[in-house]
Length: 197
Image: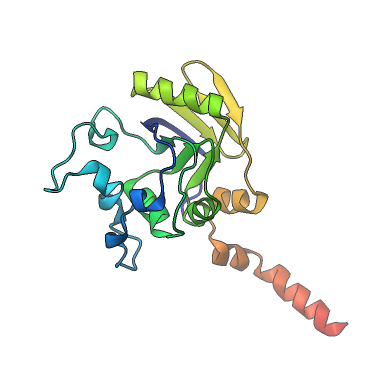
């Protein structure tokens, strides 16, 4: 995975609550086992009509909005536990999803796939959504080391929580296997001492 330290980016605002994993990636697109190619079907039924024509009123079809940050309403990633939801978000190009609440399984899947799910207060979420809707070029700074989200144009910020192990993995670009490889010497030393005693 890529190392994650800081991101400065405009955001794509999606002020919809209770976005479930079937809306993120519909079940009919889950046949592939590779992580690649899922981005084209992210929010498929919201982005396209029955004739596969892009819906003009959906935010991802609005060329004014782009960036590596998705800001969504509360309770993002609820529903079934499909990891493909995280795959589709990552493949589309998002590195961060901001909400005031995440479903636990989605949150774990996101972190395991190099996406940072940031849970902030409902008040600050509304500030970020409003700023991004009014100004598509409004920049947000995500600092993982300091665990802060900063709205650049106003200086408003909020800290967020993250599991220390997952933070370490993201900062270093590790998945779980990479992490174990990185401490191979310590594991071998532990095993050596354990066998001696």
